[in-house]
Length: 104
Image (cartoon, rainbow, N blue to C red):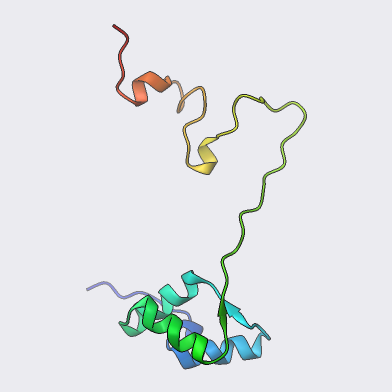
């Protein structure tokens, strides 16, 4: 069985609360709750409830908009780095070949 290295602050709920107090944080993210739940073998809901009982609040980090240069293509707002296929396709492959659509 593969062992996973767990950061000390995610070993238990109490360890994470102490980490937050030391770092002067009053919030946690769903990802933090997920790491703790994996570590202790619990559910994310149970961990979130326990963290809230300590006075911490759950926050979701907002997506930061990407700034675009004046030379950026206005019609290509999606890019591969955002997980979308760009207007020209991936590499030399066109969009219709990626979706297996063939012209008739």
